[in-house]
Length: 266
Image: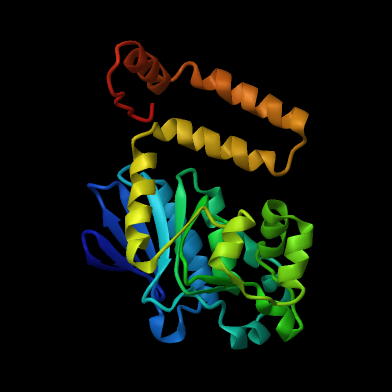
């Protein structure tokens, strides 16, 4: 990692910009001349970046986006796949799942080509705000391969197996509006208003209790791998646990006394 200044850090073609006032850290996939393709070392660095941001109390919300206007990321460095041992390829999903493991809200800001591992990273985020020129795809089938970092599984869970097969087994590029209709995108807007829409979402999230959002994210993520009855147990336990937090007491007092709450994350 290279420190550019107190608020900007650079890794292997990835930069991180902190905005202390907004409470955000923006991870930028920074290889615009190659449509932000992601190397193998960049995948591991992405995992390290999320681990460091997890410990940064000044960061409330994490944003990840691509440099330039053509792509969030057009995918991985294809030539490097033949240089890797099969055991390495079998564990690629662990680094790509870093946004999902983060206890903080993570927003993928999408524009242009969002293919392969780029889409898999976006799908591991909590929110996907996209410009209407966004195209998403998992085109690995065209190489005689399948998605290997969670893309097929997350898309099937959100959009359904039928749509996942239509998209992935054909290597089809899905435009933003269709992806939104499938539930794969949170919001679709014009490229000119993309930053504004992300800022609105950040404002919505940072006014809330960090502790509550952390617990809620865990509860919702757990619902993907549990039965309804087990999910209800997890939700009920979390609900009872939050009863003892400062933020819940503050929220109730603010509601009763008709004022805005001041949450501290405790």
